[in-house]
Length: 433
Image (cartoon, rainbow, N blue to C red; front, side):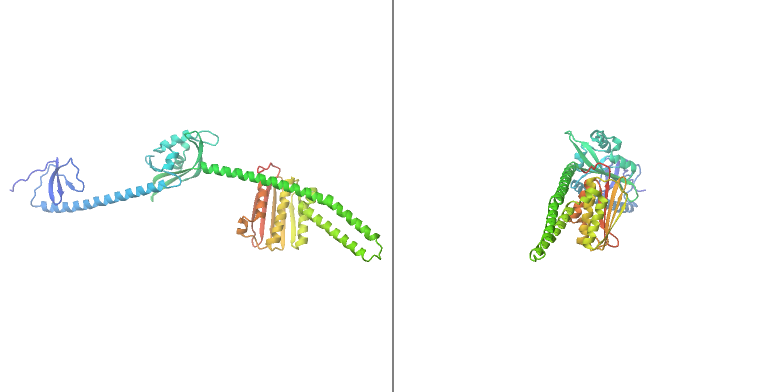
């Protein structure tokens, strides 16, 4: 029998390092090296040990390569994490990413930390939510109303919603919150994401803009009302004062013509010319007064006024015009004026742009709404013409309707032409004013 070799005890391990075997304590850690614990067995260095050493060396080399690859993967993971943190830091709003298993916040940026100070988990966010966030009626929100909680319970994304909150200095603000559930290809939840943005400044700016818009509309309404009153006054003075004077002059000239001897060949033609000029001036004055404020609108109402306007339009343009009415009830002066002016403006647009041969005006009046439709068979309005800021006629019509709390729409008509739709509520106080 051969000589017995040393026994490697269980407290030691046989380690292959750099092509040679060494016995080391197993309590130490050897990175990148293969450790073969012998235990209570015996191992001879000669004979079959050589084959074992070759296999062990090959296995150790594979393990070393795996260790290097794992280190590369770890480096790439760290680089990706740093990149993600940089991206989150430059996001326009706050971002919070939580672990679905533990509820802990794994990533967040500074914007989110300012809105959710001191929060490291969803539980912290819920406590912060129920102590600082409140409903529009002033009551505090409940913890289970936290949008992220509701998104997790529903298992889906929650659309953006606005939340009012109270800051540390006592001032209030508004933030927009959006929650998303992130899943992998297998459908497993891998992250819960909350995005948030402080909308206080934007909301304050929007409120200021809205106040300015309302003030401008109020000013426009006052100017329009004053203009209508001025038109009415001028039309009345033209009709009553100037009209009466011109009529009297016409009568005097007619009398003078009759009183002049027929042999006054020079005088009579001039008197006749003066009579004709006076008659033409009276007609022009009446047309001007009607254009300013047709008396038929005040004396007989909206429907007769529209009928008269369409008749005048047809005489001047030779474009066929038809009115169809449904329902009839008393309409306040302001609504009547708005509808009549819209009809006038629509007919003016037909003359200038439509190249139409027919115009239809449909008026429907019930207990609650007045609905007007004006359509033609012209070339049709283009989208660019509707959106053009220089289309003052369209803008003016829309503003008139908006002041009355109504709706205005103008669109191309199939197969050709343009359709204008107006809906105005009746019998209610106009909140726009």
